Length: 343
Image (tube, rainbow, N blue to C red; front, top):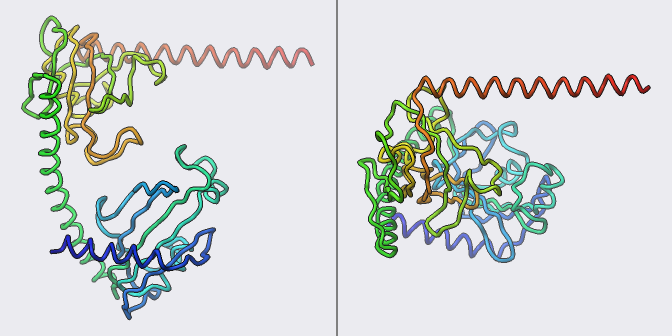
């Protein structure tokens, strides 16, 4: 019932917004307010609870960038001009409890304000659009704090439920993919699928070592998003994968890697099929990696290093970098001296 009600309200809001003309706001924005017939207004000193969604809009449609209904719950904060940007404060000041608002700003204006702070995909003539729904107004910080805690509990429960559902979705997706492509991979206890293309030799990888590997990462449709063997990604050195809990030996990697690599040994080549909960989960990693992406990695284990060997390798690289930096600084000094002599 709750889901139906939300969809019904959203549909009515969208239809009402289409009929309402935009007004000029502050900082280059335009806005429209869709009244829900409420009476209670926001005044300084009160606290607001609102849901907010942001879209990148073009003539061909809208792309959702973020939505508090999916990303962590409603915004609960004090209503004052110090905490809220002026273009939003001015609109919220006109709203009643239950009202919705739509704000938009043309990308051209954002480029003038911050030419280097926008994604490359943002183009002139398009819009950044924000929708607001003023769900509640609180009179005191104590009431607002109680609401924040209650919403946090709801968000936690919702995310737990979504995580369980996502695991089922990923399993079905992978099962269909394996059946279609006649792949029979091994499955780890954690849930990573491993298809060994070329067996290696020696002991299997464990949590006491650092692995050096080549990799190419793609999504299930085959689109590559990263690689250290493809020069177009501009990093073609073997990657150290720290399997230990010693952070000095390397930064952590996604769980699917450390999980799947345990079925491999030196010289092995394999494909790792990684469900989203063992990869980046609900986080987006750019246009090529939307939330809850199932990943495929072509892996080649080049070497397996003990902790002592890994530390020695790191120290060797550090000394080499220091030497290269010293040589560069010496060359800069020499150029300055030669230039001053000519003068």
